Length: 246
Image (cartoon, rainbow, N blue to C red):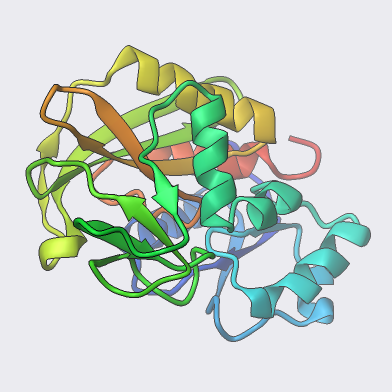
């Protein structure tokens, strides 16, 4: 599909220095499409939105929501379903959705637990999770090595690609890529169901692996960077497949 040609105007709500989407933009241009980056914090005017054939809402911050609603009303398609993007911006809703897909999620509370915990903001923007800090809610800390298992799913219009990677946990320092993981069938199926149920094109879910070998979903991420996933071709096909008439 990525070999298709066209003259569409595609807007990416994404910083220019993101390596995966820089490559995706190049692939889109090679296929004959025009691509423009918009910083996710700069806002997108209704006029700019109306001039685009498709908006790839890779990262959606509150400042962009009015323009995206205008785009939706004026029939400018979005790559990821806007209503689902807004709903899943709530970390608690994202965790509830993951649980409904059959994934294990840690216990949460709205008062600081007596033991170790992870403090989180209510929404995915504005703050990073913090070990034993202050937050809007508190997530049980699963005893595990300081490693996250990041799973990503991208629907290219024909099928859903799922990849998993091991990275060092940001709770203990800078994130660093460690390697690929052998995909767990239950996680793969759950991510595919998440895309289907919420009518999404792409999603990321972060897991930790407990001492008993059980995986726990700790965050749902619709602003995934897809770095080190080799999903550039799938993302390109997914974006082209979201264009009107494709």
